[in-house]
Length: 508
Image (cartoon, rainbow, N blue to C red):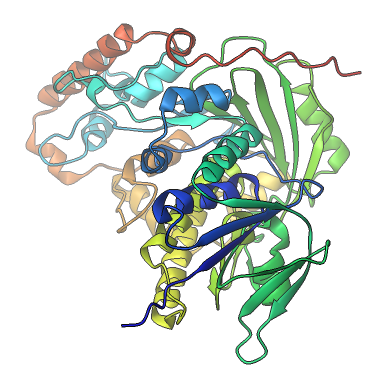
């Protein structure tokens, strides 16, 4: 058999997506399989606000064989046990979408089914009391898992919060050590093969022509290759995810960072708060149909914890996805592939899953269409399921402002309508194969935003009510005692991964 392998990979764009791709390819292909080249322009810059993650990022870090403490130090990172949602159901409400387990299964059913039956009984605490991550997050505690048998401390799920620009530089150093070649330059032309429309080369402003066989488009919203060159097309989801603008700004840290991200709903959108070791990341995502940029900026500035460290950065976007994620010999990853607002910190995960999918279906120079179609099928399915989870945050609310009333009344995708209807009847949440968000995530969202089921799973009645109350109280007691043992988040960082102090210039 002839050697038909890809010899030249060209990654267009740096930032988080580009350098994640470069680092992964450098590690897996070991600088022997093919040449890997990344082209980026410092003049163009990146969006650079994707600073929060979900636990799946640990798989990526382990694949790269990163030292976690060093990774945290280099990126000014903190740990994340979940996301707190404030004012999403109605003003004054809050809940945590926590990572990890909720209670422990009983009689082959998820724990929450039993809790639904006895909630409100004397001595039975709220839902957060049965989740170590929720309780620890609110109390500012964190630790990694230890070998403690059946204790919740043996299985602590967590992710990270970090400085996106530092993360890109961290991965850039890693990728270059693994043989990736970086080229500084601005692309001014994409050359297509006349016979089949595949990308043959890109031409830089300097006049240099860079040829490749596989091109990875990490050029951000522009979609320099996937859209501007290949005219792939885009599916607009603004009718389901109505926010189309954001204002981002860092502010000074005023207290020890907490181990969770916060999302606070405002009158026509929401505000993120991501605490890092050296500063706090903030942004206001909003709908331009209901709010001006000036008003959005004023709301954000009025709700910062500390002094602003930069000027507000406006960002425009259209939620949605490409009609094809892989078109001919071009694969779009990151913002070039589509965008869903960072409500559940899925942006970096979608980069990671796109990389994993590409490595699983890595082509030869024949570019088998069946593999390309499978990549696109899997990518569309993942985007659609995450989209439905995000839509649920908007349509399940009891707020009175025009923006939120419109969200309550909008037509939603049929799979989401079915999921909400099922939960309303009996508290059940059916998982679909390969869902990123499992039934516990859906429970925390729907119950946290005020949706109450009429009943509970009928098999709960196999146990007497008194037995259920006894068991759920026992679980809450175990969680309470486990959290008591944990050190504070700040103590853990100081002991294991404290970053260098950063002094910011005074902003005038």
